[in-house]
Length: 297
Image (cartoon, rainbow, N blue to C red):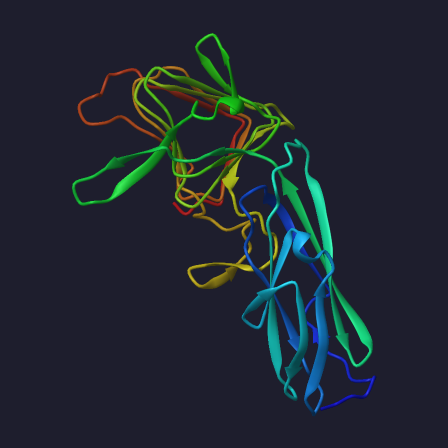
């Protein structure tokens, strides 16, 4: 065992940043590699998460969860992994918040520090409350666009989504027949895997963005570094297509509007269609000043 004060460990990173982690959901796991580049075994006398059990961050050292670890040995020219996760508790704050902590490593009297930082944000969460079940046993989970009372205001018969917090969608979020969903300028809509905004027959969608204050539809994964995986490979979720499904507009509505929107990183951007023998039924979409980018199809 090397006890020389000059023998240290090598960390693959000196800091870990989680960019925009939505409250109550948690995040993907980041990993840090600890290397022993010395020619003999080395002992890490302690690994300590400064915030302890009260911290929003969680550690797993070489397969063992906890906040404090002692006497971790690494063989010569070997390594082990520390996994870091963060979960942000709801605060009802509308603006982003920063959460910080640090992990201290003590080796032969030397303290080495890994800094942790996460940007968290409260949001409106649209979770499925129902499901359409098919004969083959599969199902399509959905909720209605007015299922979260605190997420919208009712102006006449219009359902107007608030823009003070992001909207995070799981499954299919549906504007049902004869409902009119209005999405205000500056609204951010984050879609989880296979999530969709579904404007059903005879419903209406009006996305009312403004220049410089666009409505944004994108995936809910927010990492900007190569830490997540899709299909088993490292990806940058900021630019990865196929993270959510589509905006799906059925027939029957004559007043669908999408203006000044950014629609990105999905499977299909907008699917506006007429079904079966409904040719001649009114159904229009006015699409202006909108970017649809980085789609799978």
